[in-house]
Image (tube, rainbow, N blue to C red):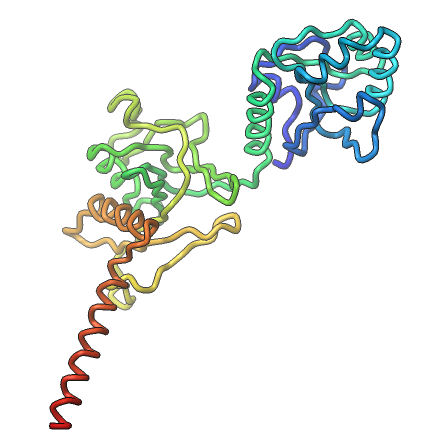
Length: 316
């Protein structure tokens, strides 16, 4: 969804409604930019973008407060003639009677918050950015493993939930089972569970488990940024599996490339432990250490050393 409704913002951020326009339920916000109307309230409307949410802070309020009543009325009248979605007051500032009167005349929504101006702008921006961010849904299990967001994928019935359950027993945290809602936030992928199934897990043969009730609040997490994808698949004798790790595999989700590890399933392999090691190894790579590259460099140096020794002997 590329927009969020004004009513949704009011509900989510618990903004006080001073005056609600008759069309507030139909007002859609498409941009996270917030305008502090310093120039418009003094009569300069060049480059003014009325489609943005408008916010009155302490500076604007004191300017209005010092104006004579007639000038204040004229300033607000010109300002409200533009189709602004809403005007928000921060710091629980008093709303001037002229603003309420003209809000009724022009059918504009007036809101108020107790939060400081900078905090309110940041909260509004983050909330709208997340709401309008590109999104998708993926079948899999998302966990936090050693602080790394690990998305376990694979065909239905291959053992994703069972692997996740063993990881929970090892002290890691569940974000979402079966369905993962993913949003692109500042070139990162943030995954969370649908509200309906949050903290629930399905295990074939047992049924539905409430992970928060079974293992406590420390075993679950609201959301996590995806750092690694672990794909489970049945062992294929005819397929080549990477045994060194020099060739890094990636998967593209919402135009973001995520490192991927493919784990073939075979009797006797402890998949949960392998996922833990994959998460640790991914963290090492992010910190600049790649064990496969280090080993490869050692081997190449040894080959070069032996080659030089052979050349020296042949010269003798």
